[in-house]
Length: 104
Image (cartoon, rainbow, N blue to C red; front, side, top):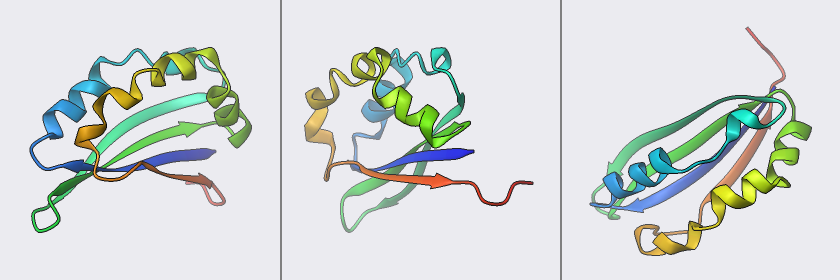
């Protein structure tokens, strides 16, 4: 099992726009071999710093399956407009990948 996550700092007040971007994107994740599930998680709003934390969380059968997705046409299509909304991001996304060592 492999977990792929991206952490996002989204400008306070832009949370709805960010959620809509993810809701309306045609990622075709389910068409990719080894895909298990996806969640977009909303964390705390940090008023002092002016952002809300979000995490995209996808689960894959293996790291190889995830890497295959990142090299696919579906991946390119899902990310083709990523730069259109830069104003709502305080920083670039931060990727983290994890391999499961204990299940259950």
